[in-house]
Image 1 (cartoon, helix red, strand yellow):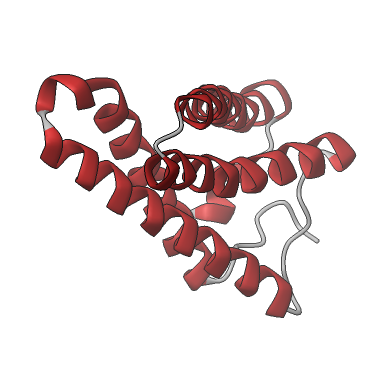
Image 2 (image 1 turned 180 degrees about the horizontal axis):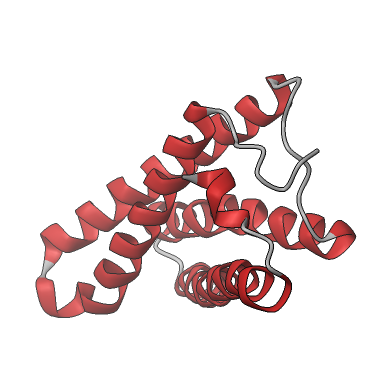
Length: 143
């Protein structure tokens, strides 16, 4: 497939909605203790929304017959798989920590969240790398 083959509109909307929610969630997570109890509930709600959106994205991907291949071979597939995994693990660990009042699960949630943010930075970096080092316009597929 061509490098400029676009993802379906539903996938593009879900991708950017997820990106926005992850950014919001990171800000909420970092400022939560100083914002008070409503921030915890907002963080919990946004996390559940991210989980639902991720499951929807996986269903879209599974149902699609013309999904563009990840550019970059197996490293891209591993990176995308890790992003999807953490987009599910982080909210589930946070929800479990909340429901079970578990400090250990809260630590898992926090560490996985930082890993997710590192992967997001790598994801953005690889898009820039492909664009400027190789002239491959991957961003056009997702806008």
